[in-house]
Amino acid sequence: MLIFLAFLYFCVACTAIWLAIFPTGRAMLGQLVFNLRSRLRPGRQGAGWSAGGLPRPAVLGKDLAILGRKALKLARRNWVVLAIGVPVVAIPSLLALVMRSPDMLPDYQPVEALPDAQIAALLQGEQLVPPVAPPPLAFTTQEVVLVRPMLVNASRNWGLMHPDFSQRLLLAFKIMKEKHGYEMALLEGYRSPARQDQLAQMGGAVTNARAFQSWHQYGLAADCAFWRDGKLVISEKDPWAMRGYQLYGEVAEQLGLTWGGRWKMMDLGHTELRLRGVMRR
Image (tube, rainbow, N blue to C red; front, side, top):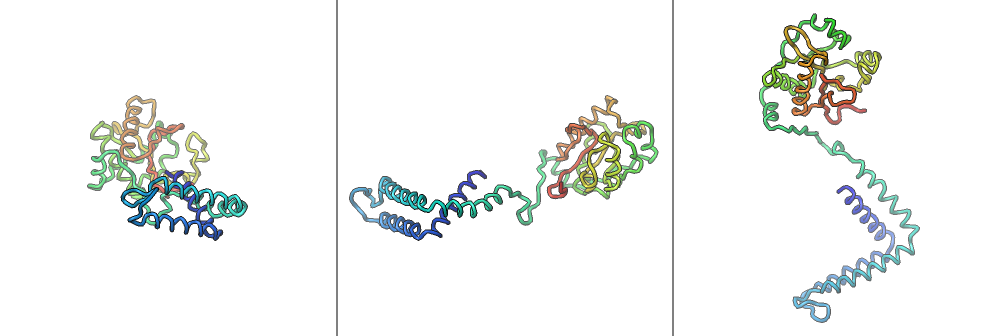
């Protein structure tokens, strides 16, 4: 569709330049309009005319062919002017058409499509309340520190996260508990730019994103794990946890979230909501 519009615009631009620059072109167009009006005048009879007084297609085709030959002759005679004028007028507009995006439209707001009507209704209903956070000591165990260093200082303040994201995440928590029997726990939500750079300095095994290159800085990402028997379960070596991560990814994607388990460097507990126009890469 875009290619067709670009081609159509190119033709219109060429015609406009031809009419603006060459008086002969305007005269030819006027002659064509005059001929069509005279031929379409009701009551005409004779060769080339139908019984109803309208011109036969062959007659109109002949007129258009004559006009086309004259236009081609004129273009050949003034090819230098056309070769310069058409690109000057057409190329900037074609580039603007090809490179345009919905964000350029005034008052455009991206709409996140939800694949499930029931989920959409739930999101428009009651506001879910964050669960009680695990005690601080739960984030200092050897298992947690080994998998997620510096987690004890991470922010788990739901109020610092974007409301659209936090409500989807809370709904994911609810579905995981009520449907699959997994109790979820927030490990980290909003992350300051300074903390992001600090984690990036620890190497690619932790994160490759620097400050403002992560959705955490915009309150649109969270790292989560499971709460079982009074302990955080993060390790992917635990079959129960691994099954939980798979279910969590399915639920998150049904809610319109991006799941880190799809990435080349998998981050199974990570989800984010990529709102258009928020992050400038």
